Image 1 (cartoon, rainbow, N blue to C red):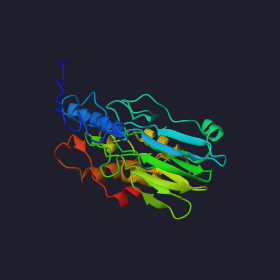
Image 2 (cartoon, rainbow, N blue to C red):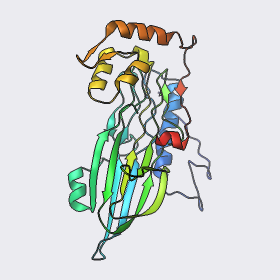
Image 3 (cartoon, rainbow, N blue to C red):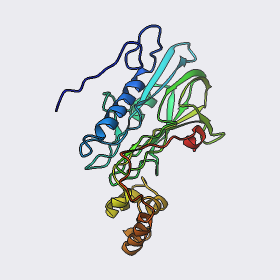
Image 4 (cartoon, one colour):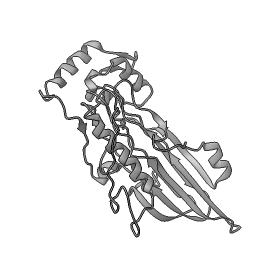
Length: 286
């Protein structure tokens, strides 16, 4: 390969100088990676994956316990990658521009005043494609001390992770306060005070898909439905695959008919390289 020259004049977002703000700069670097791969996808379509979740989400909770001893809890949610030209996107992996891992529930609850109420994949949020994007997970954090400060650094809220070559974009990230009660949607980046019993929920963005979902192997769609990564409704609507959920088989006749119908509405020309849809905060939280 020829050498790539990077031009980053001082004073730009890629080469900041004082007094420019540079907190949470990791997200900027993660998004630079998506931009770089988006450019390379136009030259090397057979080698480049679709967009990731936008970077590892950072959650920190700090304060004092009843004995006025300070504590601080920091967690990074890792993560989803875009679909690849030869395989589905990774899930539960750190962004390729970082080297970290999500903390285990046992360690968190042993060492911190926290209880993890859920840690699970979220269905129907990975970008559909011949090779789908990585499936995102959600985590519910319950705070057990008297009071603390919650800080969150997440991304991919207004612009979903792009898909490549007909692959669909992944769903946007989401934050909620007390999901089992008022379920208040929160911004992607925030600093706020919390009290004992507060539950914070974070859902990662889904990785973008690669290739037309109608070209995905129906048996892979069946496996995703059985693993609760894809609902039967989305399997039929986006992948054109009818799943018999009583016998757990693919209805071949219904699948062939649905895919034929969906292809009638596909553009005659080849799809754009990148497919990225902006989304409103309220829609992203839903």
